[in-house]
Image (cartoon, rainbow, N blue to C red; front, side, top):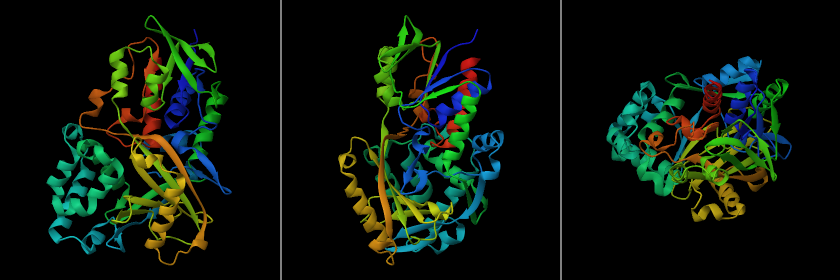
Length: 428
């Protein structure tokens, strides 16, 4: 007998769940609050350019993403580029991201450079994260690289992304970030990252079409206001005041929303969801007439800039104009998150003109800000142990978001991999 399955959220994970269910002969119905699929990977119209609101790139280790491209016949739209990294420090732009750049870096002793490089190299080679799971990240990094390298190369990254949460982060979580970028190198000296023609939307629309062609549905602008359960069993979902019957519900929305739409869950489960903290982001995107630098990724350590770095996306994906993303991360409850967009736009203009003195106001074609309250979970030591199981103690209910593939950082490939496995487990 065919089962009615609801999927909450049409971000990459929700789409991956529905994609796998539809390919396995089921007919999922996806409910999405936004007017488009994709979540943080969704595009917007940036004065004539369709582009993601938040930057995305791909590494050669993104196996689940690449496998799906093959299934959908999109592999020829994937392009790999040798990209560059830079470091803005003490008012100058320096090369970064390879052993020679590290040796030439002005502002660190040789011993500090050696310790930093050794730590990065060994992190890339490491596969087992379990021993780092209950270790605090800053202490772990300082033990390896020393106080000098931590102060110059790491401290501002932590301070301007995690703020008050800085002192209690999981070393396994931070290690996975080092490893992902490190493993996207095709030699010790060259980094290679990938982009998809048309951006993430090329994949998102192909997934959407595949789901619908196999009998699935995607309902946009249809937020679920409540998941209906009775006597420990799923009954359905409430949408626009109507209760729709379902045998199974799979939620992929950010965990902070779960308690709002599932108030009937056991109190101890609700408490676990409510205890999770998240970082918000205000991401400014700029369209320029000329390049800012030659780097895709630019780390920043500057007392006048409250950001740890920026992404010059057009140095990865060729575009008519030069595109720069400048993300401001902060806890959602931080006063800065309630500041108007204009404050962030003015800061970015000032920062970019400081980094490249040749930039003038006339070089700024367009500039916008996007906000996402629950951009990233805060993963403290032993994070996974503190999450409720994906299969909740309500028959027919599964709940997960990007938190659940800890210690991996959030990303399209990780969401696809987790979502497809979740779909198979639900049916099994």
